[in-house]
Every structure is written in structure tokens, then in C-alpha cells.
Length: 167
Image (cartoon, rainbow, N blue to C red; front, top):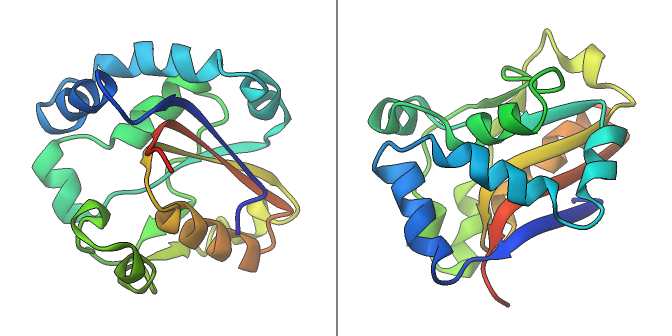
């Protein structure tokens, strides 16, 4: 379970179409602008400063090869290149797109989807981790990632997303 979560924007117009351009039309240049808005969100600058590590939500190999880049990684690098840990959290299997599933199926879709890289587990123990993702809908992805990080010994796991769907 996440300790905290911040979102820069509501996942509404015009952000829905801009995020789609960013992710699906191979326009990673949006990351700089999105990261600036994320960083400007109240309390986020302190959260980034207090975090030992920023971990972008990893994509499956299939999704990464389709897009050509991981949008969460690009955002994380824009927020703090030196704190971004690319290979600490692994995507163990391809999952259905969370956006295609009803709320009640999202958690089961992610069972066993994430693991902490064995060579990084000791380095993450007692650390303050900030997960980075582009969009949060139900929170299932971020909570599944937080769960494996906490099982590996992370002291505190929060999340920062560019946009969050309205409740």
C-alpha cells in the first residue's frame, strides 16, 4: 500500500489527448513539460528531495517494443536523473492494459507482475522510494509495485503521477 500519492493534473481534457500523444504517438518530448507541472505540484518538490530513489513503473517487454520508450522512465529522468533507478523494479510478465479492465479485475491482472531485481533488494532496504507513473486510475498498478518494494524492505513508498482519473 502506498504511503502517499500526488497527481499534478486531473485526467480530463486537454490532458487526455496530450498524454495519448506522449505515450502512443511516440512524442516523448512532452515529458519535460509534464515533469515541470509535476514538480510544481504542492509538496512534490519536498517529496522528490526526501526520496532516496525514484522508480519508474516498468513496462513489459512487449509494450516497450510497441512504444519504443517507457513514458514513466522519461518522466522520472526529467524529475531527477541522478535519483532514477531504472532496473530496481522489474515487470515479470505482460499484462492486459489496466485501462481495458473493470475496476474489480485490475488487482488480479497484476498478481505477480512486479518483482524487485535481486541485485537491488539490499540497496532498497530502509529507503524512501517515490514511484513515478503517467496516469493513475484505480491505483492497482502503483499499489502492486509498492507492495513488492515494501516486501523487499523499503521503509516508505509513495507515488507521483502526472494525471489521475477523477473519483
